[in-house]
Image (cartoon, helix red, strand yellow):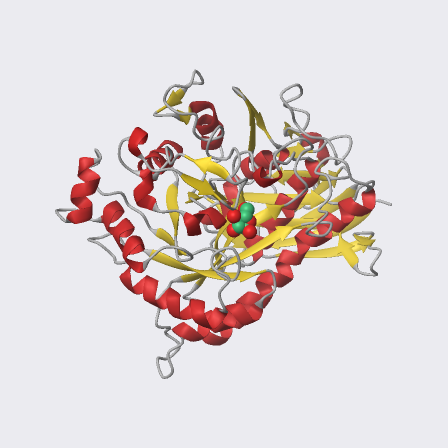
Length: 508
Ligand code: AHR
């Protein structure tokens, strides 16, 4: 049956600003994300600048990527940055023990990453090595990147061809230190985070935003241990900020860790289980935010979800350590739901990074030799980019009929998801109908404004399993969709939107 409901959007009640950094990205030395994806080397016949693929850059520029996290992930905690500078032929090699056990030639290093960020117009977010590095190594990396004038690391940078320091704000102190980043206890890591943060200096006017390696999923105890480090009794709730933010990782899976299921072949039950898993991020962020509120009620410490997205079995015949997966309309709906939830939590959630941008996990782009495919998830990022730096508006959903799906475990999945923001006098509303079979008719009730001349775009396909490929690159692509909208001449604040089954739409 058709889901029917009303979404009340009160234009006079402004929520927090949706940081553009909620639309951030993540690129790791993993499979074909860097090598073959972003970077093809200076001898490649694929058009490039300094080895960086220009078709990938062009496609990503349309997303207005605000930041890019690098070099990992698990790889970050075995990466030694000095191996990735200087003439390429003399850069030491290493084994990438986490991802495929392949040899890493270090041809893509610090200078190449910063050049990529400049081409993308994105801020760099560097994840430093705590697991197998040293305080000195991390401290010198910050100096190499951000110090001006004259110093040992500045001379080294200049000898490698870069006079000016870069501006690097976002700095990760280790990654998943509870797991691949060192298998540490929270108490032990908390001390290390304070120690490393101390020596990650602000040079000149470059001010670091230090991000401590935070929890996975609903590990609230990890978050609490870190928050205790910065609480300052008697400081009127002004924390002692050794680090300015904590990270959080959450991946959407429908199966088990051992059998995650196919990216493209799934039944309706698995489809719903996936979207229920995606919606869990709401409770997870709420849990961590609540713990953070106890120690930091004025919300000066940020929560950074710097890894999120779907994780499926690798495509048949590909290296299991390369995490290469296809991307269907189902993945796009997972992304749409995440963004609605991110917008709601924008008061505490200051950054999020999809894992990963090219050829790994829930990618924006899949490459095949010199060909490139934009995934359904890419289109959600593009359709939603107007929310970046906009003011979040609270949305109240009232469902008259339908609107939830009974899951086999007895729980209910809400099948309608809506968020709204306003910027420069315009209103942008994102809507997802997660129902696999039935349409949804939603009346947007704009309180304190009128509809004007709305325009809409729709992303859907015949089935949630549809994906884009070099043979059919636009099987899932957005299209103008004004026929899905109905205004009411008597009530200028109402707009009725009829969404097809399994679809994502934006209305402006
Ligand atoms: O994104 C793939 C991996 O997932 C990252 O390297 C790690 O941080 C996480 O476990």
